Image (cartoon, one colour):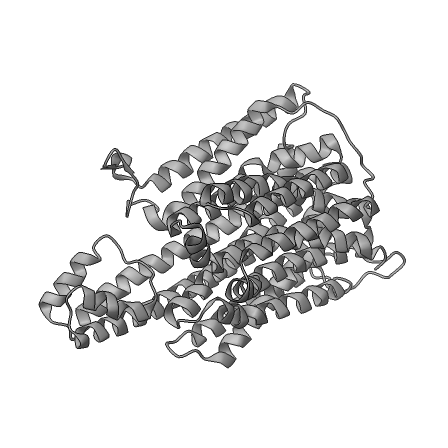
Length: 550
């Protein structure tokens, strides 16, 4: 592959874009102590980082067309660096929220769509397939290595150094950005403000509702918010459902607005006709499922390793690291296989391997870590995600011409955030729901006295929180239980955590199996073959699968 400096610049930016969330997840307790804040405040900051990106990703993609992709990429990188520096120097949660959740998020919405579009501008044929695979590997490596980096920095130095390093990396990205070619250039056009507002509000409502589902419940209210001292659950329905319904209505209005603009001959924020392309619809759906599975996996595993087994942030990162190795290796292998196999075959192999990985992890989850099975499961999960990452970007971007690559890049950003939110919300809800059910059943079947069972049932009637299993005996003793009863309660809770994790892994298997259905529209012919090379007779589907639907 020629022109390595370009993909090195774009890959570095992509790595930084994804790194933030995974680093902060393992550093929450330390940041809470440093800034004298609360876990709830930190969770709000993490949530709003995702919300900012989801809200204005399409607007950022449009600005890339108006300003030019390289200019948008540079401006976004500078904004992101300013946000990282603000976060690194933040004296309190308010400044951290401004720097991380708002400024960095706004920088990311310019950078992420530009990366996808600039790859299309700078690479052709199989080199483009390789470039998208590298970007996918950079994302996956950041997801997998983030806990390790964050755990090491938090344990031995400071979480602030991670954001300082991001400033340095983004400064290098800006410095060398002139090496990147922008063949399309700027295309000044009018941006419809109403479209921006409708898309932003709709996506915020949907994403926020999903993220809060593990607290509020999906339909039946669990712990709805208090407004004026009164629980807010209109008509006895969880706020999650109301937020998602309101967001869906706004998105429907957004789609109607885009059709109206197109019919009037005015430029829409997103060309809705893009969704008539079967290849793109399938690619975006598989992308959403990929990020849902990744987010779900990275929600479950830290819960198991830290809350059940009591490992620290660094030890957690080390146990997760095989996933990163598998992802990088199989991203490279997937790129090589793309000369022989169709994207559909590679993606489906990856989806099947992800099912196998989930089964391995299902067998490894226990009160005593089965290190070999767990490591094999994490490596297999990384291999599966690497195969998916090696294909999805090219499948999506090759479905349109270069003039629409920014729009598709923006759609990819939206579907990534929706997938991550859905995975975290769905797996979180399954995990917490299964934990409450299993714990209640375990207490009822235990040897604890009836009065103790009644006391525990009353204390957990509003739900069961995920806390370190080792802390349950202390909490029980503080509630008046004797040592034997406290130890029994700790055992029941630890067993309940294991059962809930197994249920969540089954849910992950279901998502992986369902995603196989949506991969039917992925191209069945070999893409990006070097000119003059004979077609491979083993490509496993007819080219008709890439035609546009009427």
